[in-house]
Image (cartoon, rainbow, N blue to C red; front, side, top):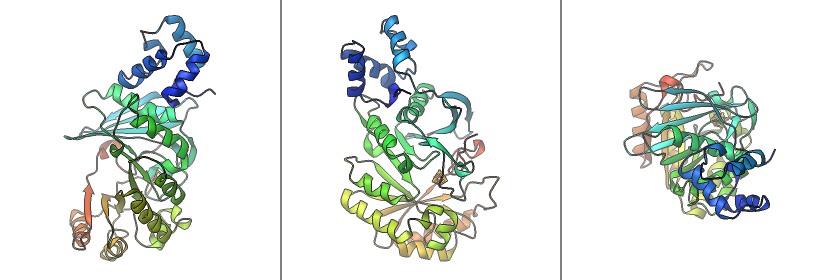
Length: 339
Ligand code: SF4
């Protein structure tokens, strides 16, 4: 299958159009239609001659994302379910607040990492998304969610972004490119479950994007129990890699930590987490476990969460608590799946 048009850089599209006998300015016209006007088919590009649109439609396809469902939460969150060309399903979540509008996008259909609190891993891994399928989610959201511009992108939907490294990095460069989405790098966050080689590789990229690491437990036994990736990349190796990343890039790492009643939200866990992060220039983001019917975990009560947070703050750690969004439409952290 030929590369879809949303997987191409402006330079690559220029070359492809040249081989079809088209002048260079056509590529800029196409980019304008896609990335500024959010058109998602050749037919909509009415400044292009009809014969050219027909030719391009046959030669350079658009990625196929069919909106199968859209659900609106009472808190303003909107969840999209897309079907891809081969029938695979992915989810994308639009999260508006007063100051920003974040789009949480998927990088894979399904996930092979099987974290025990996350619905995305239940059906296993199906395949990597192309760059065009990743960016198609953004174009579609910008087209449909006109009440607020998408200001921030987080790779926190279905899949592990570092398991689809090349396509994700290409997508990030297009998100950042002035001729495409023009979203500032610091407004793009890549979130990993702790794939050490991916973190090392990203440290060598010339990109100022944010790195978020799903920590979720501060001892190897608990982490291996809830995140199988920890059996391969142990905490010590992960933390050393994050430390090197922060030093080499001069950027702060954010750690995500899920609060599960009687497991990760205990005084013992808070003490271990405090010890692990002592002396770090980092931020920890606490997330209360969001219920998934297949799992028996429970969400801690407000008092337990407050005690856990205060315990970390007493140690001088910067702590934020992420309010759950879109719980009523199963769009909150850990609730996304392929259905
Ligand atoms: S938390 Fe991330 S890595 Fe873990 S199963 Fe869910 S999508 Fe995969």
